[in-house]
Length: 302
Image (cartoon, rainbow, N blue to C red; front, side, top):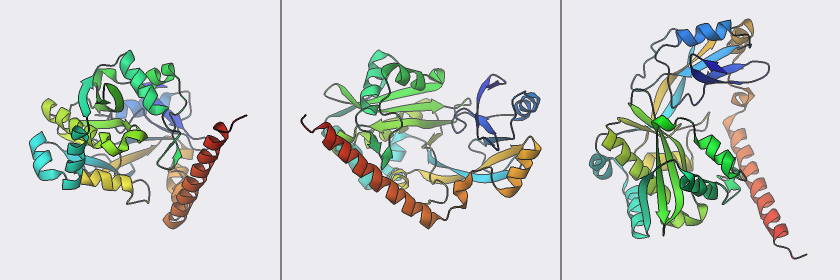
């Protein structure tokens, strides 16, 4: 649905929670007009949630609030990041990418970019131990999902011998204060050439050249899981965990009840982290075995 010329997503059945589309990349200066339209909407919305934008980290609204977090890199100049902020291992990885032939450049949103993204998405069905959501998508689906926010996006490609092996989609907020890494994906088969490290470096340069103060790499931690290989990667590249307010505004009695009982974040939040870790390990093992068996079946002569 569209509210105040902004696209709004609605999720949930018992408790219907609405949020701005890509609400950790695009932000509200004044939430009241949106709340007014949601209350008047014929579609039942129980809770509206939104995040406060950087650099303001102290709560500025009186709505019910919980702490969310971002992985944030404070950008001044590329040289400052390269010589003072980044860890030496990550810096060596970025250098290694250049030595192994990885070339970085900003690219337009055109057929060549979409073709390259499609090939990256369809290289491998598993990423980080679970099915990759974009695997199997056709060209036109890839074009559609990559087309939002083109007027405020920067695409960066990583190329090896002229072939795109990784890409970044940076989305800049309305005040040009921060840019978010909406997509950063590289080919698994080229991991030894560290294209992702090179893409981070070029993203920092793109922000520094445009005077954008913050580069945001989604969340630093997710739910109760404080550390992971991804958070280590972010930290090695000088991203820091910054807590920011996320507001949950109840619009109905159902929303008030759900908020009071802590149901607005879903049932997963009630599962202890050690149990979740065991479940994640089981999921990774199961999907890996399933993928390997499918590959063997596909390669079996008939």
